[in-house]
Length: 90
Image (cartoon, rainbow, N blue to C red):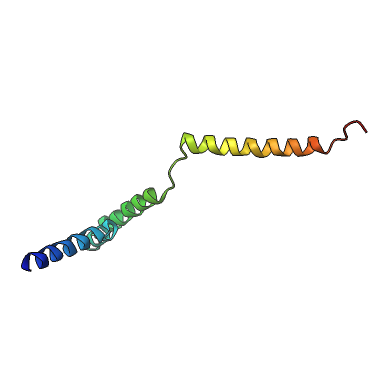
């Protein structure tokens, strides 16, 4: 019974450690910097890191190809509709 309790406690502590966000840990580190210019530089670095993480990923070749194919299909459908509206042998 004790081993189950120990394993549960260890699992809970592991989950808690993994759930702590690194951004909040960095922010707390900046708070404790005494010199104002250094502290502001730390906050600026954090903002740049967060902006880089939030930046959307560059489109891959596959997604670009898929989008190109989709656009070509729409163009083809528009051409086919216009051809069907032409009088044939009036």
